[in-house]
Image (cartoon, rainbow, N blue to C red; front, side, top):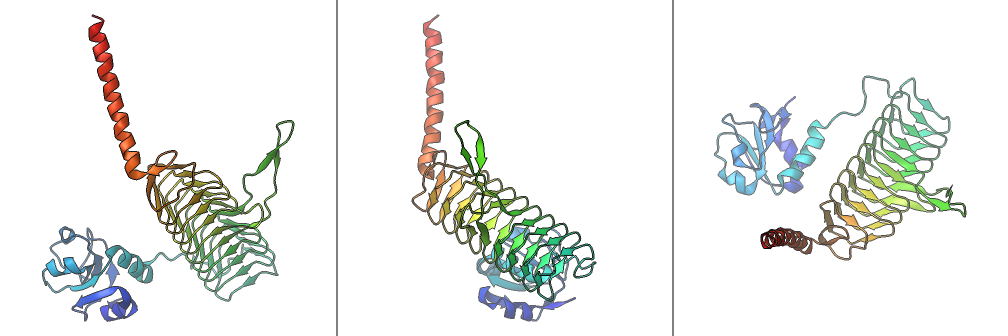
Length: 343
C-alpha cells in the first residue's frame, strides 16, 4: 500500500523542518542496509546511503544539504532517532492484537462484574477478576491475570504472562512486556526475639501513569501502605525491580537489571545504567545519570553523571580509577626495587 509523503508531513509537521520532492510515495520502511526503491529510510550518516535511491530519506538538515539530488524525497528533521520512533510507531509497529482469534478468546475467564470497553481484546487463558475495569482499545494477551478491582486505562498493551495485582492502577498507553509482575507483595519482614522473620503484609497498591513501558520479567512491588508510583513516561528495561513505596518520577529510564529498594525517590529524567543498585530510603536528584554499575548508598544531591559505590561525580570517580592504576604501578616498582636490594 503506497503512503503519500504529504500525509506523513501533515501528521508529523511539528518535527519536520523541510521537504524536498513532497509529491513522492513510499510503501515500506526499511533499514539503510536493506531497502528498495519504494522504501522510506532513516539516515544519520551519508555513508549509510547505497547506490540505489530509496523513495524517501529522513535525515538531518545538515546531511540533507550534502545528499545529492537523485530524485529521492528528502525530509529534514531535528532528530533522526525521534523521527524514526514516531513514524515507525504509526506506519509499521508490531500488531499485538492477536487478531487470529475472537476479540474475547473462548478460554478467557472474565468475572461478570468486570467492565470492559467495547473494543478490548482478551487473549487465551487470561483471567479477569471481580470489578476489573479495562479501557478502550486495550489488548490483554494470553495467560495474564488481572486481579480484582484493578483498573487498566485505554490503549494499553498487556503482553503474555503478565500479572496485575488487586486494586492496582494503570493509566493510558501503558505497555507491559511479557512476564512483568505489577503489585506483588514487597520484601518486608520483622525479626522476632528468636531471629525468625515475620512477614509484614503489603496492602498498598501500584500506580502506573500514562505512557509507561515496563520490560519483560520486571517486578514492581505494591506499597506497604499507600502506593508505589511509576510516573508518566518512565521506561524500564527487562529484569528490573522496584521496591515498595518507591516513586520513579517522570521520564526516568532504567536499563536492565537495575534494582531499587523500598521508599526511594527517583527524580525526573534520571537514567540508571545496567545493574545499578539503589538501597532503600534514598533520594536521587532530577537529571542524574548513574553509570558503571553505580551502587547508590547515599542520596544523589545534584544532576550530572555519577559512578561507583558510594557514588561520586563521574570526573572524581575517573580520577580515583587513575590513582588506583598509579598505586598498582608504584607497588610493582617497589617490589622490583626490594627484589634487587635483596640480591
